[in-house]
Length: 137
Image 1: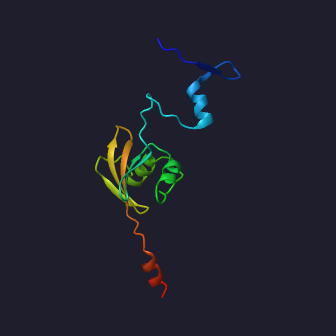
Image 2 (image 1 turned 90 degrees about the vertical axis):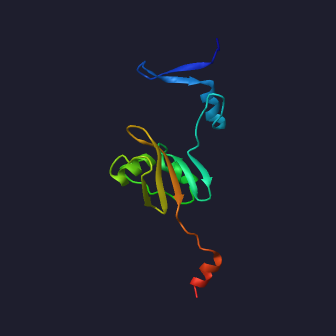
């Protein structure tokens, strides 16, 4: 049997709010700790030049910190899955694609009720310094 230190969190009315473990406290102090029980996939994984796999359940603020340019945020959604469902106007099928914000979004995985994994291809063409200076003439 494995022993683990934990505390029960109780609110002002005596109701249970949750459980706090020693790992929770350490992660608050030093940041995320990866251990043998954490099997998390990264929010954004670069798979090739200008290509990314993105967890659709992630918050757009977190995703935008990791992409070269942002995906638009809206009042109707907070996650990439929500954004895509609004853009498609339905729950899209696997392999369906849509283009906006200079990205091509391809649905890679989904559940019965939501999108889980999306491939993004960055379509933004960056101009070289030579092209920029020639455009100024």
